[in-house]
Length: 162
Image (tube, rainbow, N blue to C red; front, top):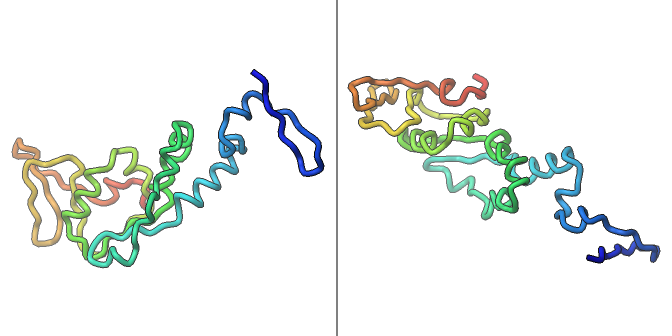
């Protein structure tokens, strides 16, 4: 297979290596620069859940970069969780519970900025058989064996600084 040559502005040509001919341009950059690009594309957003969520719309194709290939996914899959803010405004306890329940343990470990604007300090991240909301706003779950579990935000999201 003949490797094509790249032409520079001054008319000279430089041979491409077999590796650079097959790798996408983004992956030819040093990891430090790729990480900065990932942060700019996938981070710096505030995701608001609740009545005022229309004020913070989710960008279309927000996570498309992660679907380009396996290497990009492996390098950047934590950034949407580590580098964004998650804000629950007037969302109700069930919204926060469903959000938490849909995340893996690792994804919850990556989240470091979550705001809850109401008293919701008891949640379960496993599907409970029964859910009970106490008068104080805590959420309690029964595991089907009569055991009630209380979970706090720091237990669910260990990286969150309180």
